[in-house]
Length: 280
Image (cartoon, rainbow, N blue to C red; front, side, top):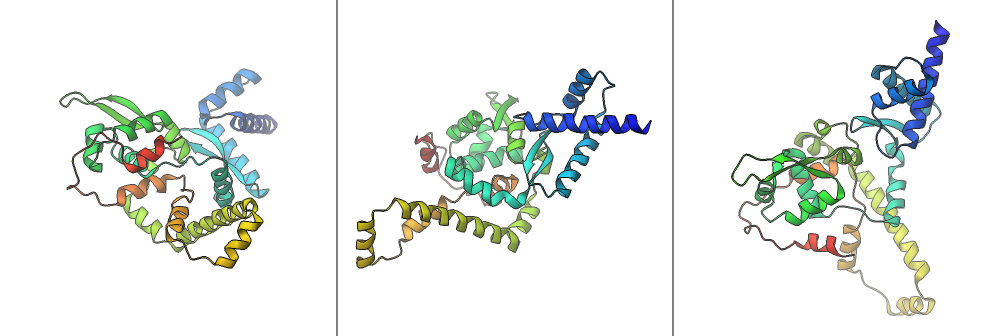
């Protein structure tokens, strides 16, 4: 009897690891169980057995000091790297393609995440400006979706976050979003500021190396003779270009900032950040 149990456990672990590794999206436990039963002809394992298989796999990864684990995100299992290697990946992918959300998109996404289901007029009221462009961009990116219509006057569309949002921010569900007290604790944590500083330094070193290799030797020597003064504007631009953290904290940070209710009425024109998004 023990050998049958061990066979099931071993086979289920192999199947789970293969499916999660090959899939582009999180794989639900029920789907893993169905595939395993269809292929082997054995009794369909329960969701608990699939979860146990994932736990055993993660223990194996940890014992072997691997940099990945299987996480439960958006009601499904997916492979992800451990937090310790995040600075390397963030710098690497920031060089490949900068896919950060602008300030206006982060504001809008934070409002939807924490107040969902929410209508566009409600988003506009909180932000103090028209959010049509930001809402449309978030719809295009698949981070939010229409979940219904309100019963209020005009029956405006109601928006909520998607499973893709949960996947991108490493959440099982929206209940895992940090509350305001947790946000304040994280922002006051010296380790958080130290990690951010290390990330900025890594990116700055990478940019400096690229600029040095691309400079002309004659121009470099003339610059040395003439001397140089710190460029405050350039420093600010480089700091603003630092890769943002793709986690639930980035969304939550936006709701901590006070909203000025006396701002101008909603304007249909995109804001400065939104105009940056429209640039190719």
